[in-house]
Length: 112
Image (cartoon, rainbow, N blue to C red; front, side, top):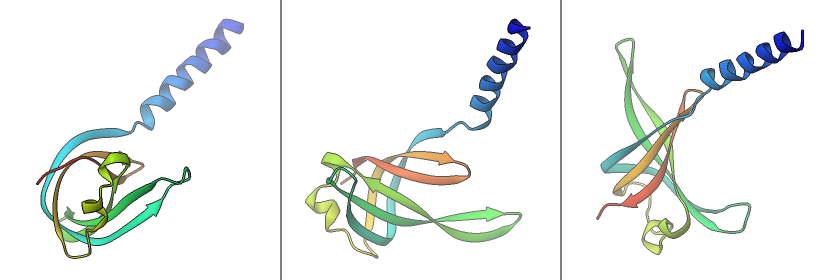
């Protein structure tokens, strides 16, 4: 009986791990227009830059624009990054992650 319960628990853990993975990949963004820009402070008191960019998507033949948050942490939250304003065009290499259907980006490197 104990083996049976241990097997069920083990299979349940594997099943949950396969259902809710976080998918990540690196992407290069060039000439993307910033819709919103702000400098925020995280829970540790460290400043970071949050940018909101637009992405064109298509669903069942219907084209629309979705917004995606893009964050720059640590040494990537440079004074130049903090000076970015709405309407500016930026280029960066980002880690793109999708979790529960929502996509978000983390800056890995700025492209000049």
